[in-house]
Length: 121
Image 1 (cartoon, rainbow, N blue to C red):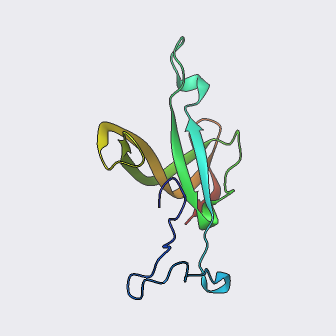
Image 2 (cartoon, rainbow, N blue to C red):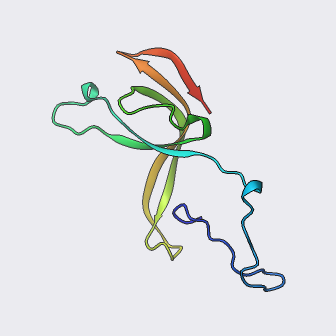
């Protein structure tokens, strides 16, 4: 998988028939995925600084669990992925792209008190 695209095989490794594969949709499993960008609240950021943000990926039941403007607490797995110099070359940089795979969202009301509505994957 490269940038969300699946490289389908064009030739069978056993019989060497070209374009002999076809996708059978009713036997496939598809899942939902959503990218959510979370930002620090403006009241917690010191004056003159920009709020930090991080990308969060939500899967399956967590898709559309939160809306823009919601204050949330996120539980998840912090991941770092090496960046490639060129997508066609396997050499990677020492700079990493970081993101969080969400496991749980909890909506927060006002100053620290949490709402009763929670969503878990």
